[in-house]
Length: 115
Image (cartoon, rainbow, N blue to C red; front, side, top):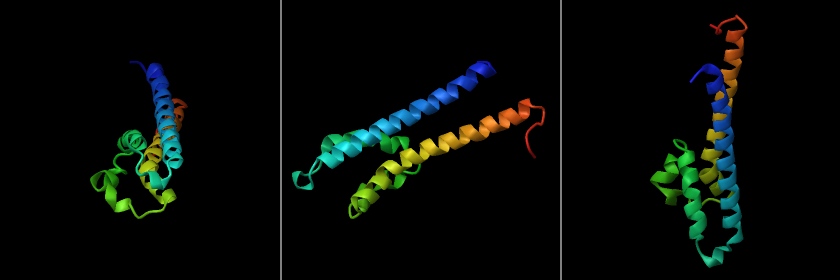
């Protein structure tokens, strides 16, 4: 794959990554919020939240190892623990892409990579 083709793939992957995380997060939060606590656990929402934990690795590892350690948290804190790592990975992905793009622009202008 030559350089121009490779430079078009990464933004598309980033957009796909962000779209998947945003869609899963939105659906899961909506499902969790639509189920009253007195009705018990929403198993469907829990199953949908599982891929978000994988998209959040390595930051979601504490929740994967022992999910019951976060049972006493408020709803907002629990959402941050479960969905935050996946959102953090999207943000880090975007930062890395911006840094790489900036360095490539500097290198193509003849300035080379900064020391």
